[in-house]
Image 1 (tube, rainbow, N blue to C red):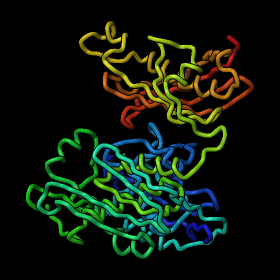
Image 2: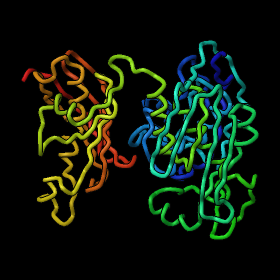
Image 3: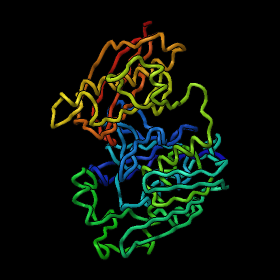
Image 4: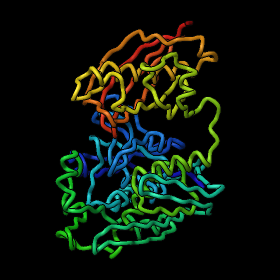
Length: 426
């Protein structure tokens, strides 16, 4: 089977669901083996963000790729349409932070892609094939998967509303079935949640024209396209999030109460179960392994876990902030806020793992930071927050390195900085 892209560019415009920002989205042909990526054309020099689970950020109510101001939000409907159209290589250019929501489904994106035509690229289509059963739980979401010859998706939902209740949908996902049974299923929400979600900065662009809204007993200014449109939409969301595998999945997947966060975690587990990481690729490190590399100790060790590590390329680490941190005793007692300089120090320690992880004898080396530029703090960090740091190498010269780092909490930018560092003998 040949890889496919679109024959020519095609665009679509509208307002984003959560951020409420007008946006023009353009689908562009891409070269063979480039995969699917998003490009923020409103940010000069912004690199494309691959549509891959490794670049996804665990957020609520949407699927987000990338960190900070350059992130792309609410990509699931676009990705569902791309996967449903059988497109392997594509560049999705957008001039804002979020694709337009259109009517709340994937139908208009699918129509746009079909109107652009298909071009065969050659190359080899990547398939992800499960060899053994897999189960993943994330909050209330539960996923089980078994080997199969195609993507077979069974979705269960349960909402305490007279029009929804318990619904189940089962689909063998092909181009034809996606277009016929899933693409037109619209996102839905409850009137009672509107004020709270908008206070959180979400659903700023939502209306009854782009979402199925329910009050306590029925629909608000809407008519259902299917009696079970709700479970069909959840299945469509799953197709979009499953596309973050970067390959066409062959498995029978049962998703119970699926969520964006849960499906991303499931995809990550699926990738781990079906691929063997090559040497020097992504590694996950616990606190004992971190302490074997970093010289820091209590109360100055500010890294709890390394989630991803590609030496001299990219590192992702986390710091769980608790009320037991020693600095809270003296920093704004009664109003605990993590000192900004310690956020930067934690970021630097994660960067130290990126550098020391590439040397054969890290115990004999130490990282000295030589510069700190373009530091910005965006919001306070409080007890209970989990800081997520992503640092990427910008330049390497011998044992000198320049990195760009961002820190987020729940997908919201907290701090960003450009760091220079050098590895030296202790």
